[in-house]
Image (cartoon, rainbow, N blue to C red; front, side, top):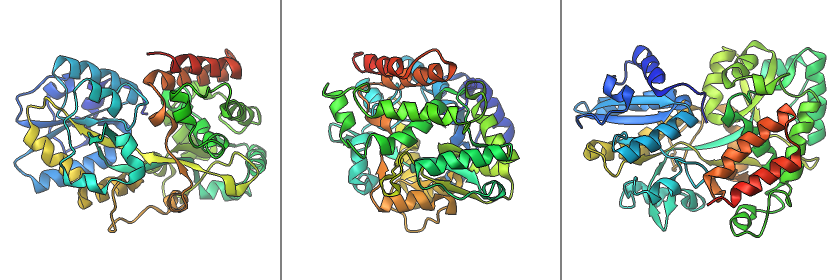
Length: 422
């Protein structure tokens, strides 16, 4: 889930901006290299934490040189699949937990692209609830690095300016939208021009509307015992549109990018933005010294029923055909270490995926921590959907809903059709 730009362009920016990683034209073009340099591919919005981890890793391992390329989700996934099939893939690369997209662990493992990490020491520390999205047939193929959430990240000064407080119920959200409008602002910036952003608001709503009623919905969906059209997803998509019709979002979401949505929060045009917690550092950069907060997006008038999407987010795999396997193994082990997880989480504005008593969380993450401790987090929906096509259908469906080119029923049918895709 990242802002689209070509891999080579992203790499060029990295070469100019980051002195922590060695840059080469070979890494920029996806060449296989000579095995002397450890090559890593990661998501663009993980640039800050990954740069910091690489810097610390190189300091601890001065004999290992590291190249990192960054790209948006769509570009990274498509390029990675091409590289893996042609034998030119990086040594270590982002792998999505579960089964929700073309570069998810269950998908890549079927192609034999991932090294088995089951013998690594960190495996025993993986939480029981996270094993289903990090393992395949009982074997571990990725190192989980962060635990991420999806909520409304907001500027506390702007919220106070409109005379508002954190909403606890659905009606509170609608009232807060009106207060924002009365002050010539919107409550929530929304950048649906960037494809992966389309999923965030209804994921935040569905955590309450769908999964409090039917925690096993995804398993039933995969087994052919449930459909999107016959579930509370219908209410969820309608609520998504209701928020738009109530003026809660940016005026033209389909014409607004991810970057612009964050800028709108920083400039005070919007009170906040529904985003993954890894976006907190970027929102903070836009907002300057302003203090940020976060709340779970209410979807009902029962405050106690509110849930928040929370799951393993950043995760990495080791290329089974890596020419630099020894260095790759060291880097995987560093990502799983207390220091590696602490650096990544603190720099990325999220939580470590593995237990770490030395970590100090950003105060904006308090709501995620509290709900996690209370057992009120719901795994990211796409991680447990039956195939990657469902998420792609979902992206398209939301954009069509906001352009008026599809009804809620048509959107749900397209998602159900994708479930049946082999």
